Image (cartoon, rainbow, N blue to C red; front, side, top):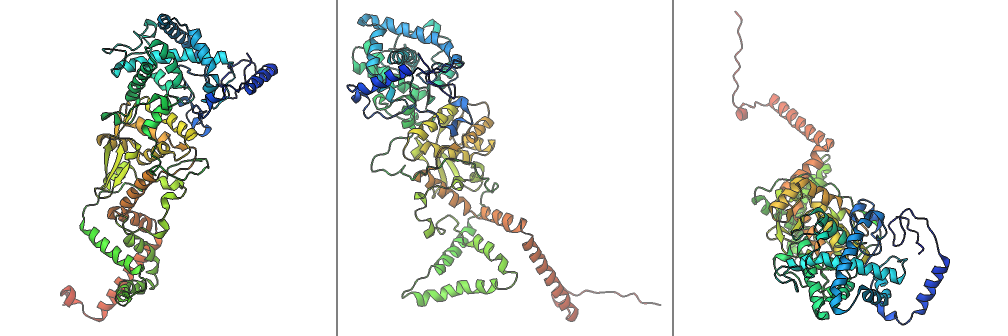
Length: 584
């Protein structure tokens, strides 16, 4: 069989190191057969592509998170020699599957023939052209599917699954040759490697093929579907990084999803109803790299609430005077506006003082909690294409020091919100372990390739990257139950989130971006935060202002000295008795 060229060495039909040969005659035969087989056109009608190549922008930074390291499942990495050691275990699983088919009077050849009739449907799931014959592809799917089912059976037992009674494996006991690969507790290193490879975007098998393998081994097709659903549900409960399974775990409908990674994605990012606009957004097709901008230094928690009322009153009066309109109230409001604005305008025309007009106005006029700083320019803000700067958000330690609390939820990504009344940012609880990075990276890759709408999970990773700057931030999230850290240290978690800062296209998720905007507005309105920023921007970094203040001080002292030289100052400063020495 001729092999197609694959520049990455991980293609569907190219053995690494083998010479590239193009068989023209075979290519012509394949094209002719494909064009003349009209009878099976309905098989792949309406089947969207769901197994993609990982986008280059994502893969280039950490390729090992997207390329299988232990076992190949499906056609994309089947011929990689470093993964071929697992073939004997896959063949052993296929032999055991064949023995289970014997009571039904079937052999694997019958399954292969059935898969061959579904060849066009199987190929429709894959984005990459599969340079295999139909028979080769069918045998590959049967063997890989048999291994995958044998591995999944332990999760049916853990879920109290069908056919496994009393916690026994659903398809019988685990073979002695597989004992070192799988265990019910999932503690063995090989077990973790298989789990991570199972959820890589380029390493997926259509779920309907697994159901086809199970059907002859069960009493009915319904029982096979229930058994597969039990296996997948147990797996998702074990691997789902968000702890929404603390309540009722969402029902898993295997028939509605193409493969395991897609199923996990829609558990985390549920499809919104047609009338729900929670996730609606405007996407931008430009590729970009997100580089988080440094946020302002850590601010301390605001100490007193009395100054907030004064600031709010001043801001309200200023805003009222700035937005006066025509009408009957002009006779009353214009004098008030004049009384508020006139002294400041008169003062700011004085040479030297005019230079501090902008910093003083920006310090006092900006809303303390965001309710007074909304302008018409912000209308439609959530519907505009995003700017890279808009992902800026203070770190967890800065938020906590400013009086903003962080609270964990037991839901999916739609539970992210900010409560202005309690100053609480709600985030879903997430478990971070050795599998989390591979899972989230491949989920983001799937979302980037398959989602036509907003990249919800991508936006979430950008948010976590924004609020986590140091190990202290991870510790604060862990203390509040937002992060369950099963890594060796908080530093590893920090590196994990800060490493996932790449995306494929600009996207807006109104619900999530609204929460970020409200957090920033509340944070920027805190008096302690504004004071520090004012000092840093206009005092410590402004030699002109310091020079002006020094000149004013010198002028005042000179004036005082001249005054006291003409008039006696003893009545203000007290009598000063000077005893003069008299000469003899």
